[in-house]
Length: 88
Image (cartoon, helix red, strand yellow):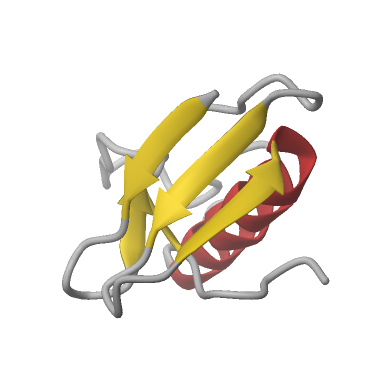
C-alpha cells in the first residue's frame, strides 16, 4: 500500500506510473481518504501529461517540433490533480 498526501492546490506528487494492481491511499485536504488502484492514478497521470504537452507545443511522444533555435528543457510533470471519488 502506498500512501500519498494531497497538497493545498489539489495535487499529489507523482512523476511516474505505479504498478496497475497496487492500492494507493490518498489523504485529501478535507481530511477524507480514498483508496485507488494504480491504474486509476496512471490514467490521471496520462491525462495531466497530455494536457501539459498540449499547452507547451509538444507532440504525443513529448518531442518539441518547433525550429531548432528554441530549447525547452522539461517535458514531464511531477504533480497530478486528484479529487475524492475520481475513477468511479
